[in-house]
Image (tube, rainbow, N blue to C red; front, top):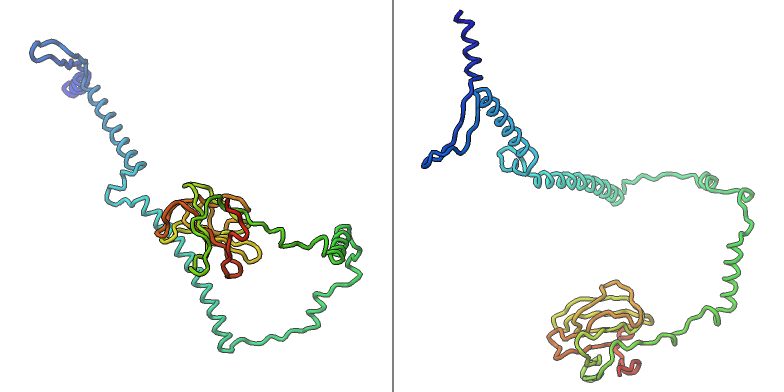
Length: 288
């Protein structure tokens, strides 16, 4: 009888209802009242603990927080290690190729290269084509090309020849010349006074061979043109072209300014050089 009563007693204890009441300590006013059983409290506590464990696992497994736990490696460190592994593999391949290359050079220098006898007749026969297997009939494109070449050979003085007289220099800026070209004083340029931020244009078609900052002359850009001509533009406030760019005559390449230690005001220092010799720009360009 005692054994039968014990399960019923345990079941009754689990299902006995209790009331959790929250009162105001001063007025004893009931604020909150919740009906509970021991079984409900046990189930609720178990579920809450399980949820807390699951959320903690997800937070550690799928967020960067796991990097702060001892034993976990950093994602950045893994990425760096992978990159270094790839680079090491590439370097090993390069070293192996270099070793083969140096080994071949060493054999050549030591004279260890063995000679190989070739059968000249067999080589000729291998690459020889029978004339009957090749169609030698001219095609339409071939006939047109032959006609064009014959015409150029016969009339090239009038039809295909180009003349340097078509080479015209474009004024880079318009303004007053404050200091002219003076060969005796080694001033191989003209200084043209312009307003600040005036566009500086290419004097002819060419390619940019220099586009950098210098302490004495500020932003400098140098163009190389046809017929051995080079134009130089100094004391710019800004450069719009880089080294290697192709430019057309009249295209804006810079903005005039007052940069560099040798500049005393907004102006353009313009030079012209032909085959390594300076020339007076005013002989070819009108700056007014």
